[in-house]
Length: 116
Image (cartoon, rainbow, N blue to C red):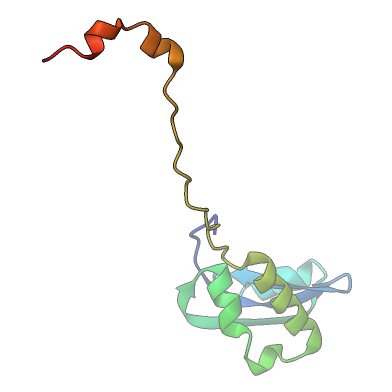
């Protein structure tokens, strides 16, 4: 992930008919969300600080988020933000190098057979 920020509060809320996952560091976030028109606000506090992805994965199986809208938002987030594995590179092919005719022509023939 691009960020190393940690959070202790995770959940979902609905705004304009769309349910999304939410992150915070204290439960006062509920008041802010309600003030801005969010409904169906469901936040839980976890025992230790987690990254966004780890936190959403942790709340996925909780009964508070068993409804279809929350499960859909959680699944969509986890799919979009899943850690991507590094692409597997094909092994490099050995390159064959051909001797240049012009290079051998520049060396006199008697110099090639000369003893060291």
